[in-house]
Amino acid sequence: MRHLHQKGISYGRLSRIVSMPKSTLAAMTRPQEGRERRTPAKTSGEAALRLWIRLLKEIKPTWGIRRVRAWIRKVLEMPIGRKRTARLLREEGLLCPRIKKRAHRNQSPRQEATRPNQVWAMDMTQFVLTDSTRVFLMIVLDIFLRRIVGFHLSTRCRAQEWLEALDMAVLAEFPEGVRGQGLTLRLDNGCQPTSGAFQDALRTLEITPEWTGYNSPKQNAHVERVIGTLKADWLWIEECDTFVQAQDLVNRAIAEYNEEHPHSALGFLSPNEFRTLWNNSQGRITQANKTEVALKAA
Image 1 (cartoon, rainbow, N blue to C red):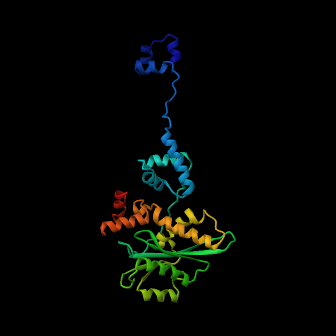
Image 2: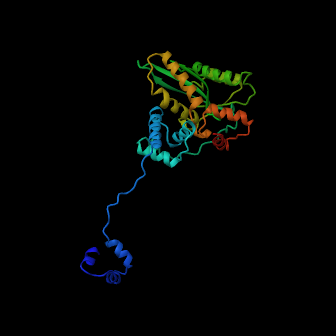
Image 3: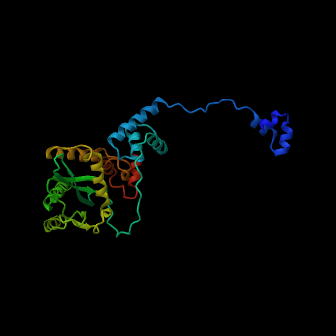
């Protein structure tokens, strides 16, 4: 169009030929002045925020968009949206890879926890010292609070070690006795929880066992998820030369998890913070509304 106009053909004639307004043709043929696209300059506040995000991801590499955003809002007291958090993580190359969810069979209904100390779950994991010694960690989890209420670390994983973790939980949460309290303990079909000694202890304490299916770790997903968090955020990050060092690490990891770890099921409060919220609410929090209540409290 510019070439034809320069040859002496008027805008009016060109307009009739191509059926376009003269103003549009004039704009198309007008020389484009070098205009640089304006982009908003990165403020010092965003640069500082990016630095905080990088530092946080070095400490908590498994945290995703929601936990990073919750930490920024809670610790830095900065209003930030999910999309901005995702953009900053993506631009810094710190997004966690997506986990593809697979189809699964329908499971039999499990007892739903509607209050603390109603349904516990128990399982164990292992890690190695620098000299390749295996150590085993048994934990007891309160499903409603997502709080670790008992644990035991040992170089062995017999029923006796499982009972040590259970005893710690019972003494801490039921100082006046657990009998008659209606406590349910969710377990897998390992040799320790199915042993005669462990079953005798459950009957003595009047704790009802609830069994998961064979080779079905997802039916005990709450405690499996917490074990994964402990390993990813603490146990796999620091190396231990001795059992004493491993014991110190486990004590610190569980204390920090209960006190500081923002849990999505708790409105990104830590288990201890949610327990305080529950105690102050006088039992008005239910399984259905606990995330909403926790988010409002935060």
